[in-house]
Image (tube, rainbow, N blue to C red; front, side, top):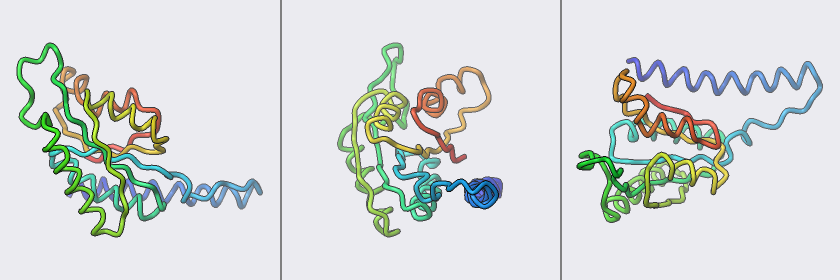
Length: 174
């Protein structure tokens, strides 16, 4: 139920932004760019997590509402030098990444959304931000793993790194 109420809040915020733009134009006479132009290009990094699958619904809504161009990104992870063994969810195989992108592309195609896929190798957070910059993304939408409230978990999460390094706004779907 909490996820549903948070999702409704995201949609409410997007609607409120549209109402604000219309009111500003009415009262000031200043033409405000149409909201459809707000998120022209959306980057959706996908992995094998449940959170990424749940974030896909929000991506569908945003892309359909704003007529956005959608890029799906998956990263073949390179283990960090100090890491002894990769995490179980790490996507170390190009074949696994290709299959994941194919499945994600099919999911969005079924919703009538044409998506472009990108596969890269590297550290996930840095790669996500580099690709966002390359494609001129207006928004990155990603799920949150929820590693807990420890300082170490928050500081080390891909989500936190993307938030801090991103060249554009980042929408985190819990």
